[in-house]
Length: 395
Length: 91
Image 1 (cartoon, rainbow over the protein chains, first blue to last red):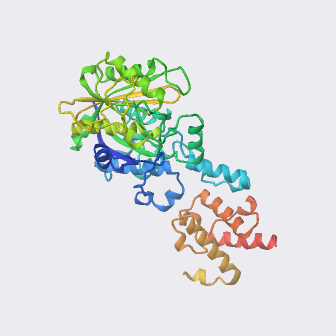
Image 2 (cartoon, rainbow over the protein chains, first blue to last red; image 1 turned 135 degrees about the horizontal axis):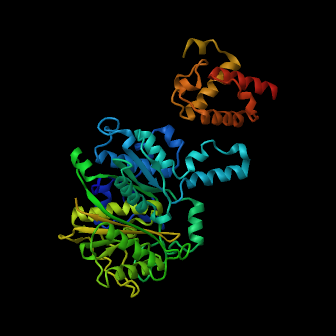
Image 3 (cartoon, rainbow over the protein chains, first blue to last red; image 1 turned 90 degrees about the horizontal axis):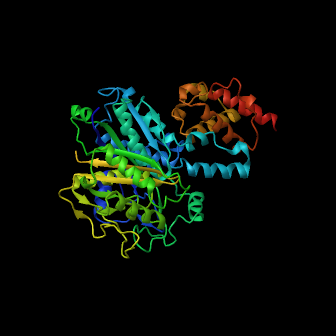
């Protein structure tokens, strides 16, 4: 069983479409947040999907297809399925926090207003959370395992981690893994706002004393995972290794993190153990860093606890792009790997007032050179207390 | 336009063209080349397309099409006949 490597990356984010455009924008300290939310303005579904599929699928599927296409192309797989790659050996594991929300909302209005016969026959296949994974598989003819996992804001990271496990078990030779979310709908925004999760100031300022909630965003992230041997035999560029994956459960509260960070600590330790890495190997942590009062305090505590007070620099991608919910972990995996490949730590934006409860170095002055960087860790913690951490090492 | 389409006239041609236009709106792959003899399979239309078409016709003509009217509707021509039959029955 070889190591899991990443040979393709695809993202659609509020600061750019494409992994390199996204990483460039992070380095340039660009913000994709406008009017308190992060919309993927540069994304046009017509660039990626035919008209028929477009009208028969939800935006979360459109975003996933675009990310998957980019990743497949970067990995040199676009024309190889059914050629050098057996279709049965390609798996698709693309999760989402919620699924086709705008479809659900439109059809709910239709049934209330005009009754049962007004409901679209496309409603179920558009809204079901596994639609993105199914659509990606259909487009490329991937006949290996196909599924969707759901763990709220940890979905994308769990998908990458479980994709690694699928390779280790021998379920597939290539896993297309990631997450997608299109939650910028009236109902979802109202619901998150009603629970007090969204920033009233419309500002994502993780670890800052002024933080008052997250900024809701849309997007997708997809990685092509394969074993190192498989990738080397194909002669493709390796962007990084998914060296470790750890998952845990707070089993504490349906939305609040465990006060002592128990689940977060367990996930990070499990990921380090899986990578056979020590805390000293990790030169950068890509935080979950939502900008909610609870998360950032508990995450800081958890990171300090795992590193015995001597934590590496830690920044939050969500300061630039907001919270992509089920896509966040996959997009942030690209950021954590990008730090390794570029030897450059991305910044936390909007950090001006330190919070004594968040005693970490948030790389407010970033991007920061990191010449000796050999490993990074990315955290994702979902509502429900479901946590995933990933450790990445250089190619 | 095919010979078969040219033989249609009046109300029937109008109904056929309406169905063809709705299929095109639904992005049915073969919609542009549809003739009265085209089967759903030939047009690459699936069962969901048929449901959507029926609902669109109901909206267009302000009528209800009972599911049993769809029995034996295999082609665009069958659908055209069905539409005219239901329209005349519902006055």
